[in-house]
Amino acid sequence: LPGQVQGLQGPNVNVFNANDTEKVVAYHRWGNGGPSDDVIVVANFSHRLLAGYTIGLPRAGRWRVRFNSDDQSYDAGFGGHLCPDVISAPARDAAHMFDGMPCLGNVTLAPYSVLILSQDRE
Image (cartoon, rainbow, N blue to C red; front, side, top):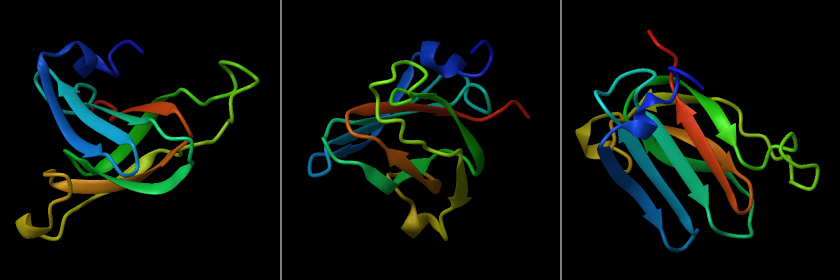
């Protein structure tokens, strides 16, 4: 996706969610930061569907699902669990930041799947 996930090539990485209980890892990659550069990768290493899993996000607004490894367009044998775009909201205040991030949103994670999220250019 030219111009939409530039952060995957950036030198900066922040693993902000490493949940041993749910077997989820989420990290933020970026170069200069900002829409179309900040990228969030969320991986579910469990056999369970995790609907409404909350993650921190670096900015409010719409985070588009750029890649969902469970999409049946890749293989008819995949589960086809959809994750809609994420609308993130700011934390109430600094004391309520989520995963050390200023905003938060919910994703649906299929079993053994990966999501890649980014925002459109402003």
